[in-house]
Image 1: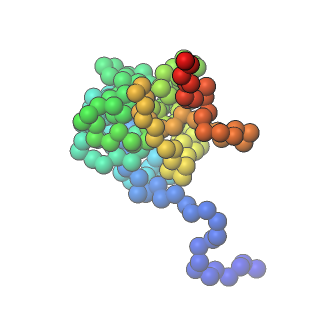
Image 2: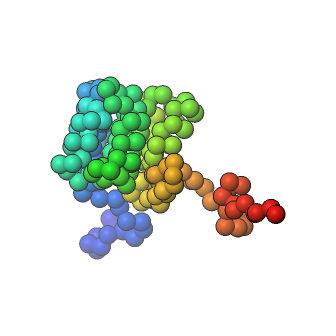
Image 3: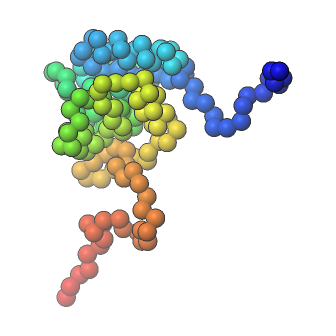
Length: 182
């Protein structure tokens, strides 16, 4: 016997409205853009914009309000690192706080650190899967990270975990004020 339908939505967490998102794909590889477009369309994304490099992406961002950027790391002439740096720190950036998901086959600690240090929000390693795309998009929408501005950095807070044993206002030794010694 089938349960009666009440017309009410099931209880639980709200479902992400992928159909409302405006996503910009930035990759110099046409086939990767096609693959990402197919994944995004399959999950219900309707507004997908494309650019073949960082310079073209900035122009798209000036013409369209973009909710999420998905960019490759290795591109020419403007690579993903330089593109994110431009988006985060340029005076005429169209949206310095846009979430950026970096897609890369170069996931060495050095490259990941470099991308993190220019303000990348999330990483997605190649080969790309639909599950990985959904997880990263859901993470940037459902769990947005606060932005931090210092002399050397502007971007999402790089601290991902709260230390339950931490008890105090300063998380690093360099955060602590120095005492004047007479």
